[in-house]
Length: 358
Image 1 (cartoon, rainbow, N blue to C red):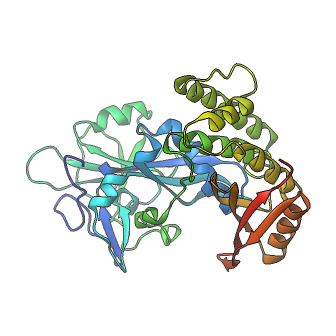
Image 2 (cartoon, rainbow, N blue to C red):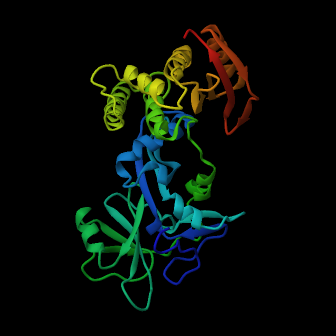
Image 3 (cartoon, rainbow, N blue to C red):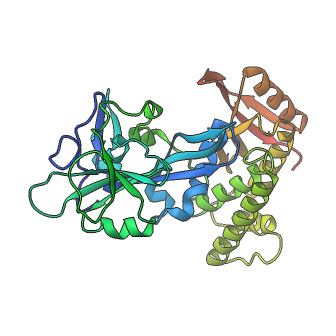
């Protein structure tokens, strides 16, 4: 557990929360602006953890990564807000029915280019607390004594002050009160949503991360980054490099074909019972290739005991899901279709596959 539990509003050194919002101290949340190429909503959710992994200083299985709204987007691409919060930190927060949990730095408006939006606490004693919102839409919290170091590293941006006072060394271009309501772009942003996000594969625990990386690399051929060949190649190379490192730690040498090395590992790991995972996944993604960029995999599970691969597919409509189902049947899979649902402009359906050409 963290040394200091998340401070929830109201508190003397935090801004007042707008209606329907409960604040968490931004010290407990990493806020990032992440550039993504053109993707569907499902593809973004599938890719975001891998996109920000190098910027997160904790193991991915110890944090929740929540994809927020577009900060600047054209045709589905641009910068997206991403929040990273420790699982232990979120577990320490009470559930808040009817209220959204939001880092307090997001109360600040996004400033103009070359500026920061800043709020300084009015704490009577001790080092003052400072909230900062940057032009890319991200933000952070620090102390007034540490602020000069961040400010210098950022090229000394001009500051728009939204509360409190700053030392004379800073260039303040104006003052304004904090907005009375949260930015409309954040109307669906709620850190509590991370409690419901589950992405684990039903593989042995020590193989879950490797299999997830592999799935990302394989899905890249047919869904993730399908419209950007350069980004796809770069992502594929990155995933293969990481897989080689993982394999080296776990024992096998992956000097040659990575897929063969991983298939061998899955087949020989005690209790894994999943030697057909890679061939089935490869055939399934190949069968869905004609629908690349339209159909995406929102979830992936493999039951090695019975040789079943369950894919949760997302598509713009039910008709497209039916096309995907037909393609998988034509590839030789025995298929059991779950109930299809629709919402937020997407249709979703779980499909359980057995057989294929293996």
